[in-house]
Length: 212
Image (cartoon, rainbow, N blue to C red; front, side):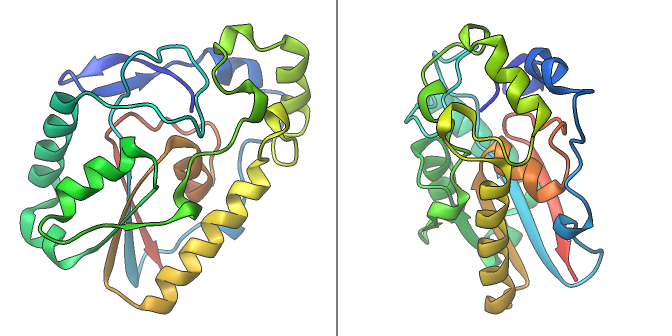
């Protein structure tokens, strides 16, 4: 996941645009109508996890990084206020298996349990993971910028691979037919779901989609 700086109520983060500037202008960041969602029907609510501790400026992707307990509690409280306890009780709650998502989803789903799903994981950045973003060779960032959808950063996943996971999970949600499904997930997957790779996705942010 790309790092974010700044605070909003001490929890929600403004995006760090350094990497985005290195990618922008080099190719289309729009994924097109194939990943767009309509304005009526079943609702999906995507929530990005709170800010993890001790990873500022680091590419962590699939790495297991933790969120401080107080930040988790603050995020859960804010989300309950925003979404409403009755709506949370009625919704199906899914989550990435990563602890930074699963722990928040568990709080939101209580006394029920959330449904973990591998398809909701963050994009895998392969050998980039654990490196600082500014330590990744510029030539590799340039290669990604030339082919944003098909290039596999660090020999990990491409955007198209993440998009396939999103579509697979989305199709299962459609088949289930539940009125509202909430997923606690990651910035990369949310950007793919929204169809915009440059979209700002602050920590703890809520994104509502409607399946036609």
